[in-house]
Structure formats: structure tokens, C-alpha cells
Length: 273
Image (cartoon, rainbow, N blue to C red):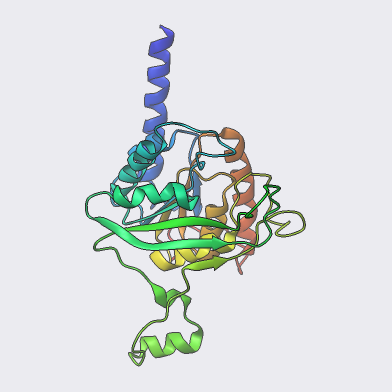
């Protein structure tokens, strides 16, 4: 068998495995978070069946600094977002504001900008002369008919009023997410060494706004698995993948530690409400 044939067979087998994992999301034998084999983001997105995912979180490299640069980045990212739009109602796109802003005029048909979110952090250790970076942008892109759940942010008293129909409007969280970078002694328990790791506290609001317990969240560029930890904390089903096997292994180990947070001490199932 030629090397070309071998590569083609390997790719076909991997995509078949991805599809099998995705189609078995309702199996009682699966854990709350599924970590797929390493793979390219477009291959991963194309392998997930339609209407399987509620929200997709995209955190690509930012086309500057760590991760390098490519001339066709805006076209490439547009294609990634378009692929995510085929399988999910909500899409979150992370990046520097001046870079992701190009996607505002490239929305998939039937999708719109729901919110321009800003992660604000004060503790960036930049050595650049001049203005010190203190923000990262997350575009919330959603299908026209997509539902949101601001009631997930209510305290018990507010939630009681909401359920009884006595709340005239549901106050939502601010579009600025303030949390420090996990660096030095800050967020030491979360730190994995990933150069662009997000705190769990800036991922959880994205999931809360767009999903209910048991819904599926996909992160095809998961890095060190922060989305997986957030899914376990919030009792959502997660699918993680990354092109780096090194970071996927870190994600697997991180996810294996998280079920111990459950009150019962038991591993959560994909079928839990």
C-alpha cells in the first residue's frame, strides 16, 4: 500500500471515529465530557452531526504573537465560523478586537452578532512600551431563532419571581467579563502552562447564557480543556478536540480530576438532567 493510500485510510478512519463518538452522545457509557482524537478544527466540525451541539466555542490562535501569522487568516476564520454554524445555534469567537472585527461583515447566512463581549484583565505583564494590553474580545454570534437564558444568572429570590411571572424583565450579566489572567500566583490551581489559557470564570458565562443543563457544548480548539472543566461545573455535556495531542493529553488529565467536585462523588453521566 502506498504512503498516499495509507494517509487517506488513516484520515477516513479518524473521521469515522469522530462521527461514531458524536452519534453516541446519548450513550449511558459516556462521561459528561468527551475528548476526541486530535484533529484539525475544520475536520472536527465537519464530523459532528447537525443539530447535535447547542454552542460552539472557537478560540483559535490570534494571528499575532504566539501561534504565528497567515495571510489568509480572515478567510480561514470565516470558513471555520461557517462550519460551526452548520451544527450549532450559538458560536463564540475569541481573539484580539482588531482581528476578530473583520468577521462582523462575514456572518453566515441566518446568523447575527448577539453581543460583543470583552474579557478585561488588569494584570497583563506586558513589556511593550506604551499602552499595556488589558482585554480580549469574544464575539457572540447566534442564529436568528437561537434562544438565550439570562435567567441562569438570577439569584434564588429573583428566580422565584421569574418562575411566578412577577419579573417584568430579566436582568442579564454585563458584556464585560472581568477576571485576572492566570499568571504568577493568580489562578495557580487552574494554570496548565498553555500560553493563551482562559480562566474558567470567563467561559462559564458563555455557557450559562446559551445552554440549559444537559445541552452540548463543543470546543474544537480546546487547548488545555478549560471549556471541559466549565461544562462539568455547570452539568453540561462537552465535546473537546485540538490539533495538538500534547494539549489534548493535558485536557484529558484535567477533565479526569473534575468529577470529584460533584456532591455525590460520582462521575456525571451524559444523561444527567
